[in-house]
Picture 1 (cartoon, rainbow, N blue to C red):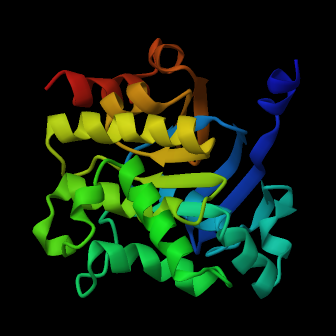
Picture 2: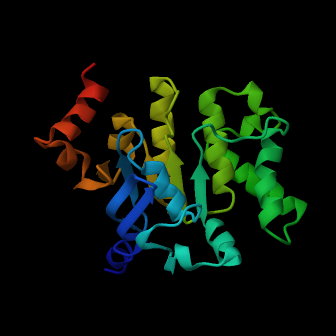
Length: 254
């Protein structure tokens, strides 16, 4: 019973959220909850506001109206220090992996630790770096440069660098973009392994419905400025809504 109660606790709670840029009304009454330990996939065409929503969640943008509560805090009301502390609990996996080419894999992973965690010994840093690299299956790359790695390997290292600060929430931006089908499956499996091993909650932004089906506990379809349908993959795509059907057809009937 305790575990059931735990899994109904929202780590992200968004209520009646609006955001416009001049005459461009991007978010128009968005409502979304992400529960503790849950992977939620956000689907939508380009320009529908997926990235704007993520930026509001991490405090890079402020909504015009509504609430965005993350880990019990209203993001728009936080001061600079509070916002910085909150961001340390949120891991962001960038589409391009965002690795420093001038650093080795080891140095890329050491960087956020040394910058954000005080009092770690060299042995502590070494253990944490090797642990997350082992978790993503790339311990052998520790002394390589990012330029020597494949796209899939760089994506894994980017996820490892995010995990090294032990975030409670993961935000994945197009995690399978530009990867071959086999590597996409491997990244999808890694996202699920991260959820299981690190007990993270996640929002996964993707156009890839295979990724959505494999990683999402729940799918949320963002259309016309709000979530038009939420549920399991099957529930979302069992619909007569032509906007949602065309999204499915583009992915699977080419």
